[in-house]
Image (tube, rainbow, N blue to C red; front, top):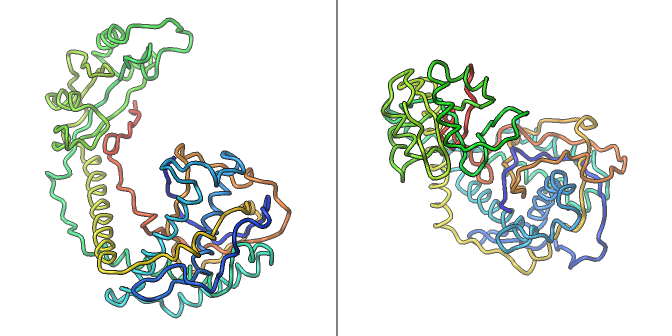
Length: 412
């Protein structure tokens, strides 16, 4: 399975669902986890951040994958443990690079922000049991350092993103939007598909042609009668080229739609390798879709700019991981997050970067279902609001339907 992103990470009060005594070598928190241009990165900080990641993963995925999830395949030939540890180490490289270049961008932590970070860390240490603090390798200094790094990275990203060209031409973001009903060749019936009491399989081409006749006057009405879904797709001129198509729609359908005027339906069913389509052009100049496309373009530029600068920082740096010490880090203790309604929060003034969590399906299992709650009355301060990248890059806004392949049900 691939790693996905969580929207944010919190300093969270935890309890343990199980322990694995005597697993591996003890982590030497005084050792260096890595070095950046000759500067040691604390194993204490690195392990604490790794354990925070484990808390998030256990809370969301333990019920789904079971107690052996950390030994399961991450999808790339490594275990979940190895994959997450690599992500954590990559993130540490990023955080400390941003910290090292903060002065170049005029980024600093204000006294007010420092006070908020200290208060949040103090609250976290007070709210968690000695056992939890020990297992997570949490100290006042480690918690504060994690929050400081998050804050610096967030502010650096904002500064770097200011460098993008914000000019997007009307031609670049212009969008056309059409409605369609799809009939799958691999399925006996359409996407919606047929009404619930219709169990007889139909020939999809014949079904599409029949629908085309009924939809001549009103596609939405015909779809409602037949039990079909009318979806929408927005696209730009560049999407008509196979190699440049950013939508999930076959270019054959896009090219057919591009010949239509506002309100005009195609007079024939359009066939692709996998489906049949009945389409109608809704707008050859969709202003709302164009605004969404503009947002998507700008978001992508911001992501690209940040990634470009980060890579420049990496290329100019020397980063060495202390593999001997880092291999001692494990996630043998299984964590449970206290139920949200039992937690209190305190803003620490640090924005938490989106952390990686593993789940190809993306299913999010409620924290309270992951393991038995020990009843400890722990609370947690919120680690922040805004979510920076990497491990948290912004997702470009998707156009109404097609950009990114989203299919939007038509209103009507």
